[in-house]
Length: 169
Image 1 (cartoon, rainbow, N blue to C red):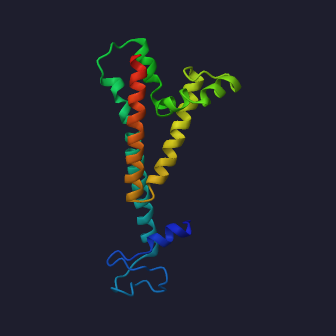
Image 2: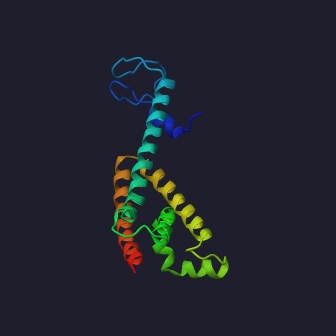
C-alpha cells in the first residue's frame, strides 16, 4: 500500500512526463503511450530506495571520513590510539558533548563518564540517530542531499580538526 505523496509523485508518464493522477484511462492523454499505474508506483519505490542508499552513503562519508586521520597519521599503534579508534562511531558528537554542560549532566545525573563504555555507546547511538535523520533529509531530493552533505562535511572537518588537536595533547 502506498501513501498519497508517493503515489502522486510516481504517476507521471514515462515517455513525456505528463501528470497522470487525474487520468481515468490507461493511456497518456498527452502522448498516447500506454501505462500501468502499478508499474509506475513500483518504479517510484525503486527510485526512492536508490535515493535512500545514495543519501546513506554520502552522509556516512561526510560524517565519518574526516576522522580517518586516526588511521593514517604517523603515531604509534598504542592502546591510546586504539581507544580513539573504538570511539569512532561516537566521534561526531564527542567534542560537542565534552566541552559543554551536557558532559557534566551525564556525569552528575546518569553517573556516566563519556570516555567510558556506556558514554561511548550513548554517543554512538545519538550519532547514528543523527545520521538517520540527515539521511532522511538528504533523500528528499538532489539539492537537499548536496546542501545537507556539504554542511555536515564542513562541521565534521571542523570537529575532526579540534579532536585531532585533543588527540595530540
